Every structure is written in structure tokens, then in C-alpha cells.
Amino acid sequence: MRPAASRLGAGALVVAALAVGQVLNERLPESDNASRPFEAHVKMGETAELRAGDLTPRSVDGATRLTRDSSNIDAAGVAVVVHFDFVSGPKARSMTYAQFRGGDGTTAHFGSFGERSVLTCPAAPPGLVVHCTAVFDIDPGSLVGSTLMIAPNSLDERFDEAATIDLGIEKADVKRWKATNELDVVESAVDGLEWVS
Amino acid sequence: MILFMTGGALWRNHVLPFVAGRSLRQIILAAGAVLLLASGLFGGLERAEPDTLKTVKAGQTIDTGPFDLTVTKVGWAKQLGDEFRESEIGRYVVVYATVTSTEKNTVDGFVIREALRIRGLDDFAVNVGTDDLVASEKADMNVVSVSDEARIDYLNPGLTYDVEYVWEQSAAEPLPSSIELTFYGHGFRQSNIDEQKNWFDRFEVASGSFPVTELKP
Image 1: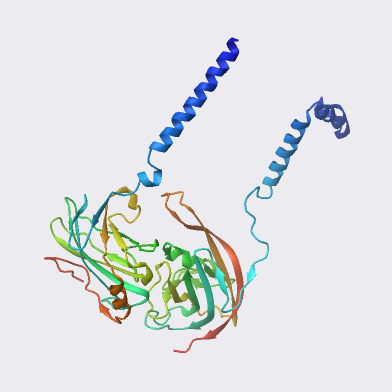
Image 2 (image 1 turned 90 degrees about the vertical axis):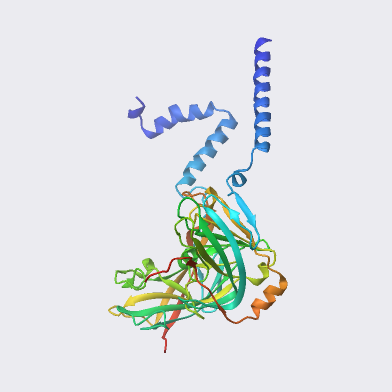
């Protein structure tokens, strides 16, 4: 009798442990969800207050061809230009990672090193306003309802907070941009500083 | 004692009685284990690559996994547009192709570059613009858009580009009238280093011979 009772007790313990594991598994956040960045959602003109600094989106525009200081870009889709201002917090930081999230469920990422899709937002001393530029070549069908996430870390975007900009793009904007053959890109700059080459 | 027995005696005196004393279930399990171990010699349960590669012709589309790749022609020139000034080591070898995204996320530029290699030629610059020469299989190239010569750093969802794969080769090595191209696919998995998912582990999917013509300015 005693061995049977002992086995029964051990079995009950195993079942109880499995039940606790199941409850924990259901209650704890999934790893992808738990390690997502903290995102501050902003619209044009609003300011996202991040640990790295304050980020304020200013404008979004597009065309089928961009003219830039370095090279011109003929878009395979539509070339979109997003301007935003960034003021570093206590330390000089640069924003080096961007992720476009299309209204159709597609995503596109890019960083500081690129020609067709590139984020230009250099580090400047705290307090100075950096006028930053994000340029990307994208399928026009993904633009309506899209957002652009901007983060400081290009190597692993999960470990810091990010600003997610509601681009506010509507069908009429996309139609106009598809019909615009040339857009001159205003390059990034820092208020009060001049690049010396 | 066993060490000094002949093979037949060992089989008769020890192996057969041992096997006879096992149950049917034990014999089946043991046979399965032996088969599994033996299969390890041939790669185990790893997915086997096809023995023969698909042969490609100009204009034929190859599915590389994250994007479709269509080589249209191959040429060479000493100078190529504004982006590639006169080669200091000899010539540029150019593969014209179309790349079309079949993914819902961005395909990184390195995946596009890894999808094509020239096979069996020598004296290629390890990177365009350098004079460090290697075999063509080890040479990296620049991939630029035909329309504006800007680099293809990313291939975003839903987009198609006409591109040039551009290598640089020493003039000391003759260029044959046709070259062999190898097409590579990629598998999608999580990185062992930073746990982010991307296209890795390239494998050959096709190859083909393409005539080379001189590109006139």
C-alpha cells in the first residue's frame, strides 16, 4: 500500500508542477513581446521624449526621383523623405536605425550607411537641434496607414526605446508623389554648427 | 579470452546467444539505433542538397528564397558610367540582372551580393577599387541600380530593380568569351550571435554559362 501511495503522491506532484508551468507560460509575456523596445508614438509636430533625447517629426514628402548633394535616386517605388528634429539628452547621441511599417503589413529597415534608403542624424552636443533626414525607396501600395520607427541603436533595436512616427500619409499624397518627378532633399544639419570638409 | 577468438567463434559463442536472449522489442530498438548511427555517416537527417544543379540561361528567373534573380546579359568594360572610373587594374566585369523582392520584409544588400558568383577565373579584385587579387569565387562585387548607379543596400518589399553586379579583374588575366555563373539561395533563421532573424547559409541552386560581350561607352 505504501509504495502505491508514494507513487500516487509523486504523480500528483508532477501533475501539479506541469499545471504551475502552464499557468506561468500563459501569464508571462512572450520573449519577442518582452524584449520589444519601448515605443513613444507621435504625430507630425509632436515630441517623443526618449532617454536618448527629444525627437520631433516635422514633415513627410515624396517623389519618383530625389536630387541630393551626393547622388540622385531614381525610385523603383516612391522615394519618401521624412524630416525630424532631434535634441540629445545628457549625452550626445545619434539616431541610426529606422524601420518603416507599411499599412499593408510589410516592413522595411535601414540605417546610417546606405544610398537609396538611409537615415542621416549625426550626434551633436546636448541641447543643439539636429535636423535629421530619413530617405527610403518603398512600394507606394504600403504607404497609407504607415509608421516609421526611429531608434538610436542600429545593431539591436530591442534594447532601447524608440520613437514611432505616424506618417499620416493618405491616398491623395501617394498619388501626388507618384506624379512628382523631382524632389530636392534638404540634407541634415545642426543648428549653430557648420560642417567643415 | 574474447580477444583471442576467431570471428566465427565469437559470433557463435557470444553474439548469437546474446541476441537470442533479447526480446523482439529490444532487437527492433537496437536495429533502429544502429541504422540511425549509420545514417550519421551520410549526414544523418540533414536535408540533402540536390545532386544536379539547375542550368540557367539568360532571361531565366531563379528563386533564391528572399528574391527572384534574372540575369539578362554579361559584359566587360574598362570604364562604366560615372560611378566606375577607368579601372586601374584592367577591366570591370558586369552582370546585368533584375532583382524582385518576394518577401514582406527588407532583404539586406549582403544577401543580394551573395546570390551570384563567377566561377573558375583568376585575378579578381577582392573588392572593387582594390588591387588585392583573388579567385573569382572569393571576389566581392558592387551591386548598383542601372538607372542611377546608386548602391542596392536594401531590397524593400514589392520592389524590382534592374541592377549591375560589378566585379573588377586584372588585365593580366584573359577574359574568356563566356563565363560560368553560380546562383545561390539562402535559408531564413535566427542569428547565433544577436538572435535577430535574417537570410543565412547560402547554398547553390543553379549555374549557367553566359557569353561575354564588350560594353561600348
